[in-house]
Length: 111
Image (tube, rainbow, N blue to C red; front, side, top):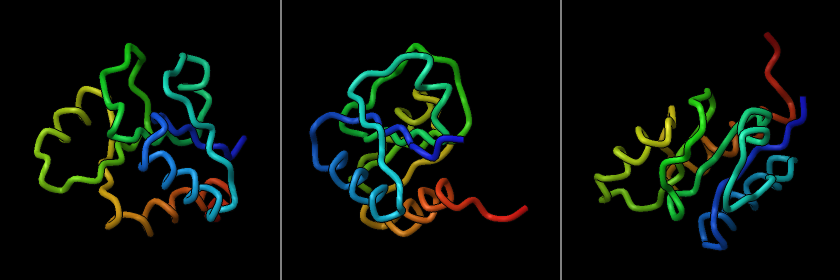
């Protein structure tokens, strides 16, 4: 399996942070501002920066994380539901957790 996570973002601070985290974890994020079905289905992990968060006309899939930065924004949960995200991670608090998830793509835990 290709360990390249898909990062959906605009050229914004969150996208830069996610690219740096992927590099620190030993992988390179494939960053896009819009996405299509093949890359959506093929990526082992999809991180959607909250800056461009909007509903995508794509099927639901596992391992989709909405990455936000504003803990006071209660509407982030509605966006996560509309995107089909199974998790919401707030930066900078979730930095280590995201790093661990990304590192797991490069060196999966033994089962």
